[in-house]
Image (cartoon, rainbow, N blue to C red; front, side):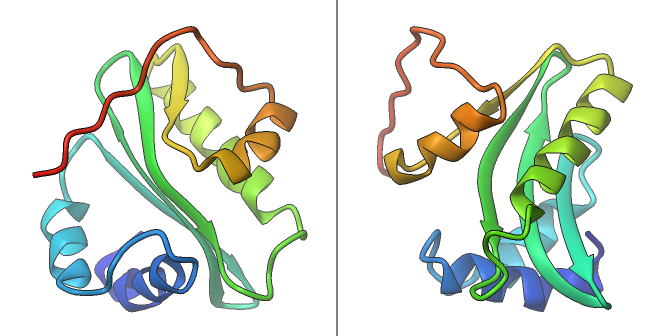
Length: 126
């Protein structure tokens, strides 16, 4: 993703209910150029239809947000985004991808060979 993609990426994330739009372009822009950020977009006919936000820590890629534009679901865009992130993670020498996901999306990730590792994901609001 480049700075020109921010508006479209923000719209997809907000439209899918993954985050609030308040201050989102500024937050994404501030981290977009960080070396360990993997903010990937997927396009169809020049239109952004998917966005993945993740960071790489030297071992794993951690996906915090992944969304497909409303109306573009069920066209294998999510699978393409995961495939792109797998390739990028391997190129960096990473060994796995960890996804924070709503339970309603777990079936998609299971279909892409994700598993529950037995770890607990803990969250503290700030």
